[in-house]
Length: 357
Length: 278
Image 1: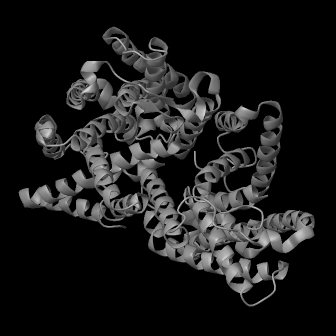
Image 2: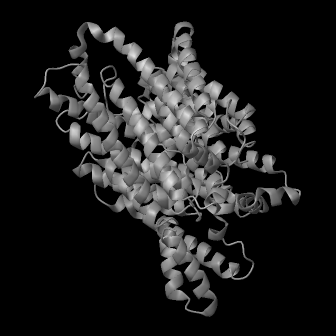
Image 3: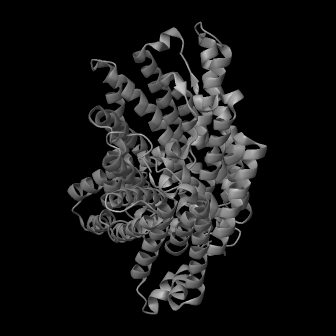
C-alpha cells in the first residue's frame, strides 16, 4: 500500500526526529512569516492585477491546504476534494442570489450570513461522503472520492432550476465596502489566516498526531486502539469544511460561480498545489498555490499554452523533486547546515529521494 | 464499443502495472488526430474509400505503440515505486501536455474544437455496414485479448504479474519488459479504437477529459484487469446511459456515478475482478 512505500520518506525515527522536526517547522515558521509580511504589502504594488492574483493565491491556497489535511497528514489521496470547495461556493452564491434576487446592493448582514452558510453545507456534504470513503484506502479511496465529486458535479450541472446548471451564477457582488479589491483582499487575508491558524492548532493536537499515525501505518494504529474510520471521517469533514470556507470566498471574489468548481480538474489543482509546494510541510500547499497562480497569471499574459507549461512544471517536480519546492529547500538546508555524522546518513536518504529510483 | 476498447487498455494497464493512467484518453485523442492526418494525406494520392482507412489506422496504431513505449521507458518506469499521488500527477501532467501538443500541431488557426473529419463523406451509403464492422472489430479485440491472457504462455505471465510482481521476477522473467509491453499494448488498443472510430466521432479538444471519466467508471464497475468485466461494464454503462437519457435526460451521468459508488462500496474490486491488493 502507499502507506508502506513512503515510510522511508517520513521521519518516524525517534532519533534525530527532533532535529528534523525543527527544520521542518522552522522552515515552515520562517516561510510563514515571510509569506505573511509579503501578503500584507502586496497592495503597495501599483495596479489592481497583483491584488487579484494575491487574493486568488490565498483562496486556492486555503483550498489546497485543506486537501493536504487528507493527503499530507492522513496519507489518503482525495481526487474529489473540489466537491466541497464547490459546495461552499454554491451555498454562498445561491444565498447571495436569494437575498438579492434582482439589482440593488446586498446588505452586510446578508453577505456575512451567506458566507457563514458555506462551511456547514460543505461539512454536511463531507460527512455523507466520508461515511463511505473511510472504508477504503489508497487508490480505491482516490477513485471513490473522484466518483462522489463527479456525482455532485453532475447534480449541480444538471439541476438547472436550482443551480442554473452550466450557466453558473453570475453577478455575485459583495457589499460596497468589499467591492474595493484591496478591502476584499485584506478580508480574504484575515479569513485565510484565521483558518490556517485553526488548522495548525488541529494538526498539532493529539488528533493531528493520530492522523500521522494513520498515514504511517493504519494497521498498527488500529492495534493501538485507535478508531481508524472515525478519525479518518472526522478529518475528512474538517478538511471539507475548510474547503467550504475557501469556496465561500470564491464567489464574491470572482463575482460568479460555475459547476466546473466541483469537477475533477479543480480537484487536480489542489493536488498540483500541494505537491508543487511540498505535501510534507504545513505551509507547502500555499507555497504551491503561490507558485501555480503566479505562474498562471504570468504565463497567460504571453501564451495560451498554459496547460503545456504547468504540465511540464509538474513533470519536472514529480521526476526530480518529489518533495516539492520546500522539499528541495529543506534538502539544500540540510546539506549546508549539517555536515555532522548523523546528517550524512539522512542527507544520503534525502539524496535518494531526490533522484528517481 | 469505443468505451470498451479504451477501458480494456486502461484496465489492463491498471491491473498489471497498478498505475491509473489519466492520460489514456488523451493518447486515444492523439491517435485520432494522427489517423485523420494520415487519411487526409493519402487522399491526395488515392481515391477516397474505406480501404484508405486501413493504412491510416495501422499507421496511427504503430506510431502510438512507439509513443507508448517511449513514455513508459522514460516516464512511467520511474514511477513504479512512487507514491500514488505522484503517479496520478504524472499522468495528469501528460493529459495537459499532450492536450496542448495536439493544440499546437492541429489547432493553431482554429484552436477550439473540430478538426475536420472528411472520411464520413467517403462512405456515402456504406455508413450502416460500418457500424457492423465496428462491433465486429470490438468483439474481435475482446476475444483476442481474452484468448491471449488466458490461453497463451505470455498471457499467463502477464496474469501472474498481476498476482505477484516479486514471484514472477524471481522466476527470471523481466518485469520491466512485461510492463512496457502491457503499457504499449494498452495504448495500441486505444489508438486502434481511435482510428476505426474516426469516421464517426469528431476529434475535438477536451473530449479526452470527458471520456476518461466514463472509462474510469467502466473499469471500476467491471473490475481492474478483467477483460470480461470491462466488456460487461461497458455494455452496462452504455445501456444505462441510453435508458437514463430516455427517462431522466439531465441525470444520465449522475446515474452512472451512482452505480460506480455503489460498486465501490459493495465490491471495491469490481463486479468481475478479484480481490488482490487489499
